[in-house]
Each structure stands twice: as structure tokens, then as C-alpha cells.
Length: 145
Ligand code: RB5
Image 1 (cartoon, protein in one colour):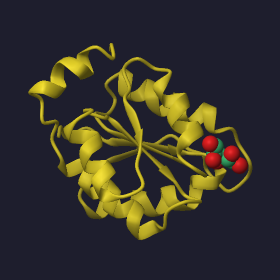
Image 2 (cartoon, helix red, strand yellow):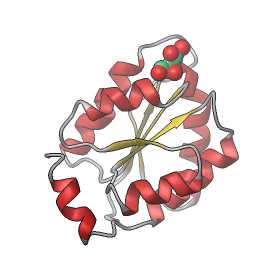
Image 3 (cartoon, protein in one colour):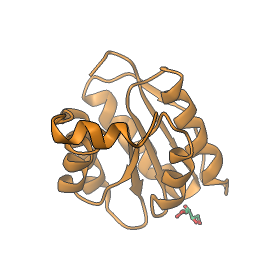
């Protein structure tokens, strides 16, 4: 991974988990670009998924993390951007395979579905795992960019 910051964003349902993931990222020595939201007041996941995606597409960061209640809405929003491959992950295996097979550059998490320790484990694996390339490279290329 580059020394660029990890870009992170959430809606209100993911706010608390986002803050604990920021702590984890800093403890791991990463810079963090936090694009909000900034509190538990109700907001729209679409705005924050798109903001993180745009920052990744613009090269402000190499990897991103998005959190909403399920991880689904905010991943759909992020995936509207062709520079982004966002994967909803619920465990370390899905986080590892999202990197190895799909070269996912955004990790999407559901704060109402998984606990904070599982989320942190997903995050660590997501950041530590390289894309396997090989047979997966042509498939990923067909997704467009
Ligand atoms: C917000 O209530 C909830 O709908 C949102 O966080 C997310 O789960 C949508 O996919």
C-alpha cells in the first residue's frame, strides 16, 4: 500500500463504528481522511458513499472504508463511481477474498450487522492483503475503471 491516507465515511448508522475504525487505523500507523458524517444525526448514506468514492477516484487515497447500517446502501453509492470496487464484507474471509480476487479498493461494513471487533478484523485483513492478479486480473479489467 502507498503512504496515502485511508479515506473513510459513514452515515449516522455507521458513525460510531467509523470512529472506532479511525482509532484502529491510527493505531496501525495509517493517515486517515475522514469525509464524515460528523455525528449521529440522520444523514443520507448516498452522499458519503459518493464522497469516499470520488476521493479514491481522484487519487487522494488508495483504499477506502464506508459504513452504514448494512453496508449495502453506501456500497451501492460508492460503486456508481467506475474508479471504485466496493465490497460488503461480514468476516475476515470475505475481506481477504475481496482483495485477492476482486482487487476491491473500498471496504463496506454494516454496523447493524457485525460487531466492532469483527469490523476491525475485516479492516486489518483488507489493508494487509494484496490482489492475487493472474486469472483474476482479466475479470477485474472487464469491470471497467
Ligand atoms: C439508515 O437507516 C439505513 O437505511 C442505512 O444506514 C443503510 O443500512 C442503508 O443501506
